[in-house]
Length: 291
Image 1: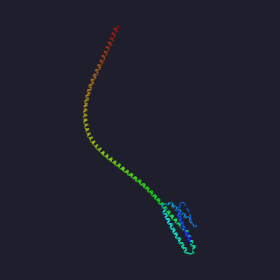
Image 2: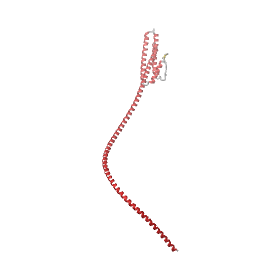
Image 3: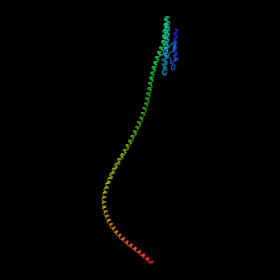
Image 4: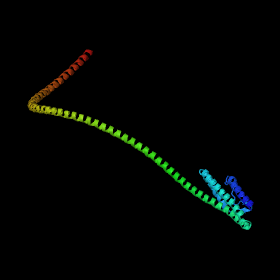
């Protein structure tokens, strides 16, 4: 009986070492449902445990070291518990005697059959905890990604706002410079307009003095014009009288000239007749000489 218990304990240890050494690295490529140890078949829940381990190894690369250390510690503790349990059972079986040997053997067999189920349940509990941790880790990663995205968005927004602030400050500085230059130009224009106004006032005062002087000259010229008009009226009267006398004289001269012209025309006719007469006498004398 003690030999059988020791053999069973050794087989369990070899199975644990085999599963930890060979089966865990091959979880990604192999899936199995049962392993036989001396005619005993493990339930299908062990395959579920291995599938959870496969998902754990595929997903949790960053947590594989911590989880592996935890699982190794748990496995070592379970092995110690199993070793203590099986080491205590042979002692109890040896102290009980030969009468209850068959019953103890059957109880040890049932206990040994219940151990893999307990081990699988513990593994499934650990895998569920691992799955929960993976889900929490995934949620935290999503939260971190969302926070990073929001931080990037906020950073871009802050950079945009800083650029807009710089542009607005530059624009405000430019507007302030433009306003200052405009105020300076307005002040210069005001000074220039003040000077022009002073010059205009001086010119107006000078023009007023000149206007008064010209008004006095106009008055004097108007008086002189009135005097000239009166003198002109006298001259006009004299000129009219002289023109009348000259007209009468010219009329007389014209009539005398007309009579003289008539007389000259008459004398010219007489002279023409005398000339014709002399020509006829010359012709007669020439005829007589020829004959």
